[in-house]
Length: 201
Image 1: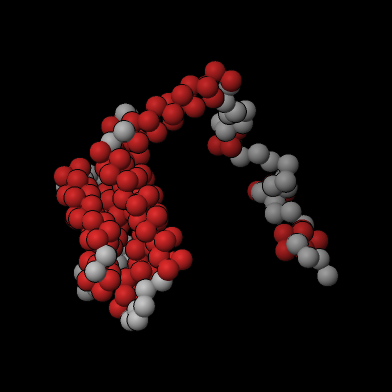
Image 2: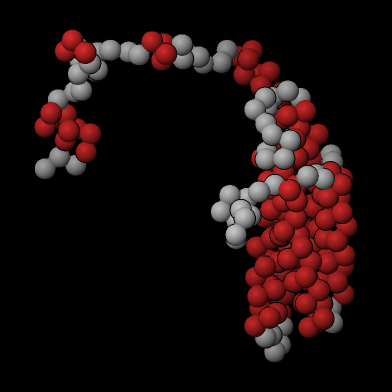
């Protein structure tokens, strides 16, 4: 029994034939020849790398990314310390809140980086096919805003349950970050997430 399905079909029926009996194994479609030998030259590769580095520098220099880096670092430091000490008498609500902020501490930054990167690519002419609302950066920004809102509420719940100062500070940081994202991506809330935001859902 042949373990490779493709090879099994070849053994059973042979290569598919084109009109006139020519085997498809020998025929190269004309459209495919346009993609032959498309490897970047050393100069093109260097230019691409330089362009990507410049883009990354621009994205990292934005107030949004500076804010999210400070937030993520402080959140991880507090959560790591919590892992060592724990919270006495933690209930289900606080446990769920901790799971949310733990997940979103990195997730928010990743989504905002993607949103800013996509918008930068479009503004520099690297993304031609786009819609003013239904585009990747608005979608990423909307997901980030949803995560920011749920993490802000979770930090508030943790602050109330523990009386600790840091969770309240983190909630305030997320509130400020949310305002920055809304200002930078004013159409993000209008983005329709397939499977989530369609009418009737």
